Length: 130
Image 1 (tube, rainbow, N blue to C red):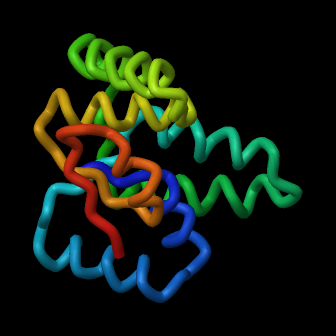
Image 2 (image 1 turned 60 degrees about the vertical axis):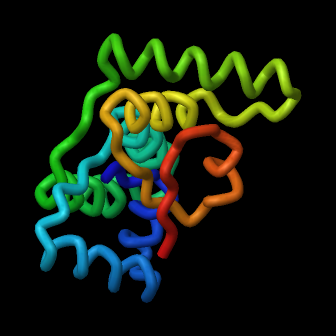
């Protein structure tokens, strides 16, 4: 399972449902990972934050719990296909989200997100919420 940025941010903010799901994932040993485009989004947030050191500590804490899933060639190919199809339909999402979806599709994994409506536009993508 890949962890979307929305889930990771909710965990860092201590949102009850996200924290409960994070604990369940750890108990179950579900093999959850952070896709590298989500890492980009998290680090961008760190460097835009008013309290950079606090945000950096939170992100490093997540990286101590969850390994990352890289955007490799197969994921990039899937991401490009997803992004192009959505653009053609006039239903564009952020490129980082297309990349996260591409990684999931290429690996046959689901995405855990708060934004099911957003990722739900992508055919074949398994989306889980909390």
